[in-house]
Image (tube, rainbow, N blue to C red; front, side, top):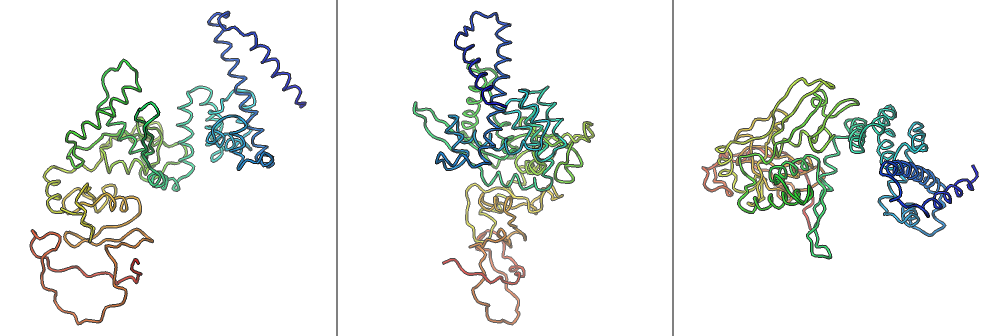
Length: 432
């Protein structure tokens, strides 16, 4: 098509806007104008996306001297680089999605709706029409939630690594703005986000004349004040109650398949592994479903009685990992996972520092044995400074009975019968 047609259309719109006086229109007519300008906006976004994709594929962006197509598009359109990344990503996904391409070209999808549909339909083409129906009838947030559920189901078992990846890239950053305000930004796994939301809900004021955002800010300050006034991370009361809805078969399998549900109230669709991990820090109220049919309700978690918590604190005064003498911020760890049938009783508990607890939870390290003879297996590929074997094989010794000796880390305990047999040493280099 001749590009002059597009230039003529632009001049027509510019001519209309030059004499546009909104207050001359009745309210209902102004509402109709909003709908028409929205169509123009959507058509413009569709054309920009398709054309930008062509610039990226052709390499024409290099003639401007920019470092990347994203940098070129950001400079050309006066937008952020992250927004430009989204436009080019959508452009690359739209190929082969005929129904989405047609809806976009007709002005029936906003740029955000197009991005959401394409992100899911690109990995599961069978979901394309359902997503387009959702875009036509429901809100953008509902569409994004459905698209996220489709992507997670398409990933199958690969989605089990998502929580670990998000956890590794977690952060909380804060700074002081130019006018002196305390501001910040954070990134958390969905289950930890649910805990934050549950805490804010508990401390949110019943009313706030400054609006919902202000009420959320007040709740955050209230949570911090409660912690400063004597909140105890080792309290017998779980920090949050999280409501989840999950298909029973998906829970057993460990991941969702197309058409199955796994979502946290207030967060939306999440991997099954995220719901399982949430039991570490909260009580779960789970609604088990079979498709759209509710088949059961249950409560799960790791509640430890006050008596048991006091006993494990008295026993494990330092981190249970051999060689680690950390005493601050110790966390109670279940040796055999509750989700796999491990009991919540003293013989299945150990207190470890946050560093080693993270290695156990996210990096596949293992703490085995029993008090006071713990054995630490560091994460695969890592070497623990607490469990280094000798650099050379020790001289052979004749077997003899090891006399009882007191525990150097727990002198208040009776002498132990001696350490259990050690596994064969693994030859490692000592750190220099």
